[in-house]
Image (cartoon, rainbow, N blue to C red; front, side, top):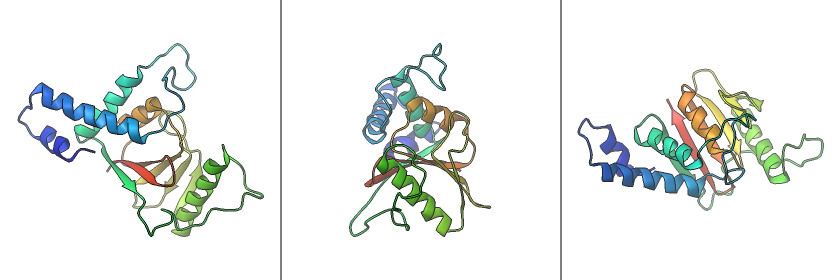
Length: 184
């Protein structure tokens, strides 16, 4: 997310360790600010209670993926007069399968309708390398888009950012911003 850091870390010239650590810290702080997680712990991935993950280690790994240029990350903020990021309106929930709480369900439906209107194929809860996304969005000649609405976990995010090929991963924490990770 920090403009100075990615460019400097891609050069062959080594940066002093303290500059690298400062850049990592800025990315880590940004990730904590913009990503909502299920809990403050990263106890397990995929229900395997014997495997424990250090939350700060995971966030650091994501920051390093960004700073190394392996993953691009940006925050997209909604600006007035734009009322929504999505072309579709929120659906009335009658007859619609509820997934999670009301906002989560309505937002998923709205995003699904947005991409269907643009002739994308949309699949609910597609499999990732680890876990499932809320939505998978597909169109020939376009990168796959995985979408998480609301909360996620740093463990799931890190693992999928590190292992997926050619994709866009959107995190929609609320109606005011979208966090976009991409590997294209």
